[in-house]
Image (cartoon, rainbow, N blue to C red; front, top):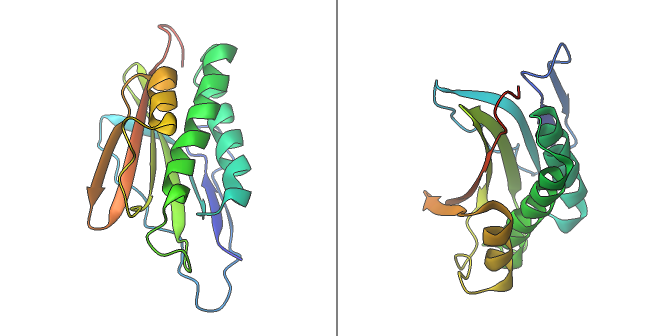
Length: 165
C-alpha cells in the first residue's frame, strides 16, 4: 500500500493527521511543496497515483473549497476539475510499474484559491486540444502546466468571493 497524508493547517486545532501505509520498497510521499510567504497553506494531500485514490482528492477539494466560502456550484466544479487534473497524471504514467505519488496543495493567495497537483511527469504533456484539458479550461479558466526535474505540476486558480475567509 502507499502513504497517505493530509495536512489541514489553517482549519482549526486538528493539525496534521498522517497515516503511514508503505510497503517494502515503496517511496515515501513527495516532499511538501514550497509555498511563498504571501500564500497561506490550507491543506496538502499526498496519495498513490492510482485511480482508486481519486475519491480522496475529490473529497478534499470539496472540503477546502467549501471552507474557503465558494458557492456550491463552484465547489462541485472544482471537485470535477481536481478529478480531471489528477486523471491527466494517470493517463500516461512515466513508469507504469511504479506509479509514484500525487500531491495536492491548496493555498490561499489574496482573493484566490490556488490548487496545485504535482507528481511524476507523464510521458506526454496534456493535450491542449484533448477533452481533459478542454474540460479543465471550461471549469477553472486557464490551468497552468509545468515540468521541473521530472515532476509535473498542474495549477488551477479560482477566485474567492469578496468578504469570504
